[in-house]
Image 1: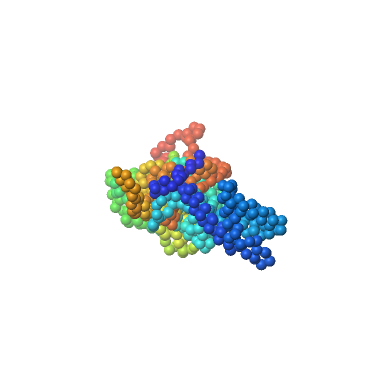
Image 2 (image 1 turned 90 degrees about the vertical axis):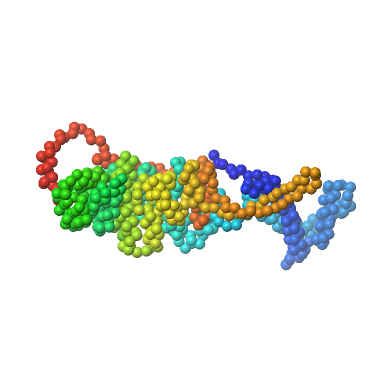
Length: 601
């Protein structure tokens, strides 16, 4: 159901500056006075011959006198009866001679001029507005005025750098997209109604896209993007051998795979060993190694690990040089931290090379195929989701923030994330701060800023709000997020007119004193983010507040239908429950023999 703004009618409400009110009486008075002035002014200008057109009969002053006399006679029949009858006879005579046409046309044009002030005054008197005097700061625009003001504000940028529209009614320039977009809205705020039309335009334009989709909504809606998801049988894999090339890549990859624990000693030692293993694989296999080789390397006994670390990564020697309880604990933690690597090895083992994607090549080059990629999330495998998504985005961000690629205003790399908090600790800061000149456009969606604070900290979330060139705010419930967003959306300074009326106790005339005071008012109170925005404000769509350039614009995004193009997921074999009779347990001797034959170390 559409909600209407409550506004007051009448001049008495003008005494309350903060209330939105209309003044129809003031509009009527101003329209009549100014309308009469412009009517007679234009009539005086037109009351003369023009080119081949003859002038009207008689002087204008004579006509005005007879009009006034006829009006008084109509109200009081005993007055001016002679003058009214005489003027009526003259009108009949002029109608017969054709002179009435010259006078009639001029009166019609003058009447149109007299109506124009009423139209102008309507915007001032009949549009709900408060009585506050704006001085400086942000402004809030609503309804059709918001679309009009935003298009006017972006007109120059859109002419110079046109790009995809952010709503059906607002074209957004490339200079705004490269400053990144952060969308915040609670459950049912209509975030998909804003994101899906944009994703559709990106796919139709065949621009490069990385899309994180933890719920499968975008996988179902768009068939063209390839899927990277360990649990999906249709999925492509990550060619890790081509992307983990330098020591910096190896350290970032180890940090993505091995999370920080309560005691950093264990996680740091495990990271050092993993770095040593990847250096060994690079030295012996070049770029041609896979997740399986890495998984097998993680199971290497401590004695063999010591030789590998001494030769390829001396930093990690101390962690394995003596077989002790500490060493055993480090290796146990390494296996547990890297459980996602074993799962990814099972998922992507045996995929043909054409279905393995190198994200370093995808970022640096302009690929002809696989230009749009969906990174699937899975609530049943959160550790695997965060491990591979953080690893891929760390590769992309390291290239974006390095000298490996040049600045290019024509490059377009979209990085969109639905439920961004589900990705874990990804390098958002580098993408936001360094990506603009490299053509990166980030579009992040989250339900609650507290989710991001739990991952990145409060200081980073504050920085993220300031680094986002566009903030889209949907319906948000009361709480810390609403308070933070209301503060981030800005405020303005106004001057308030204060009227103090004194009534004498003994009678006599009242006295009024007028004073003015200045105050700072936020654009939105936190409670308004739950009442003014969302899908239940206006039928057929969702209302969101777009904040850019210091002002807030309440825009309407109509619902659009996106039928399913494919299933959200086709489960891979490794995630399906085992069926049928299981093979007998392999003995320890057989295991040792197989390791001796197949172990690459």
